Image (cartoon, rainbow over all chains, first blue to last red; front, side, top):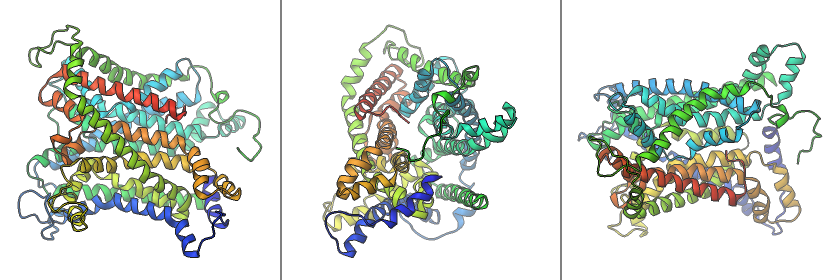
Length: 291
Length: 297
């Protein structure tokens, strides 16, 4: 990427002229103020994560774990499935998110290819229809889906299928936008070069286009998974009696709040963090290997 | 703008790179999904909003084109709409004020830590949204650290609270929608050529003028999509108001949710939903027109 190589050098080497002369301390402050504010904002964003980790080791004296930190224990981490229904809700959430992610990623990638690579009538209308779900507040989307399911007589059958339908719907637009951005930044001449070197359409697609588009598709799939896994509002409308993990958390806040929920929250954070760090390391190693 | 001479021939993403033919068929499955599960329910919501409100969920509704549903909905809940847009507007403004320096720092100041900082922006959001909001409830509670600190420095009176006030609800909105602001801002700022900012400095503009006349206008697409991606979900949110506020801070989302799921008053809920959607779309259109950017996302 051109920006990666240029910016750090440019950011440091040139002295800035600002009319006024500053003391070295003042200049250092002015140079680093933005970075300092940025780091403060990041710290602020991690405050609740710290709380979740701390409370996952809490041994509450009462039945509800949302109160103050009382005494340290490992037992929450070893008894995750103990609260009734917690692990069932996690299993349902994983199943829903995986299904919705696969469907949304496939449908959305196809749409992105059509929009970037092909010309046809009604592109503007298509773009509008893709944008509208993102401009719709979740309550409205959830409620209109529920009204439809009820009116076609599905109100007894609300559950896995209706949740997946809803999740694919709100993930789809985000997948299209993400993959489209990647495709639009790709150099079409690489594919022309492949064709010039006697690759047929399918070989060009499989060996050139798809590998180039892959980072965008993977990013879109990860985005879809996290949107789907964490969704409460739309799910609450379309789930009927089924309990996904967010619905379980929401239900628990009304009665006893098991400390194991904080353990699950911590694990979610750790797992995704490991994934991202591993992906970054892999990307770095590969770029070193290539360069 | 670009320094290198542009070779002739089709550019990536330009009109000429697009092929005619049957490629549009790739759109069909996704478009069908959107039509069946988005357009159709929205149209149906319009009909639901016009049912006779004297019916009920169990006995069914009669279609009487009862436009008065909208009048009733607005009369009873206009203050909820006003509150929703006020809270969402303040939250969006603060998100922009916090997210801009963060995105700027990542794009221009982070150097080799850029990717690490970018991951750190998203990382908190891997954990469940409800759990994070619930932990804010603990942090902002009456015995919590923030309240006692503010009481010690006399910003809050001794019996003052944070939880169950508009401040808590807005703080929750700010926190939860922060990455939706930061990421588009970063995407936009990282495309800004730093040499342009330096050029402004070389031409004796003060850092502030340089920012106002060069950096900020160039990052405008990110500002527009960031504010939209923050404002739209914040308007319809009801979790923050429910977990961090009281019924006095309820937003229109709370009312829609209750009308649908608890009261089963579908005509009222449908008309509220449509009013909310119409107002949001109207604001988006006016805003995008005024900001003068065509690219939405």
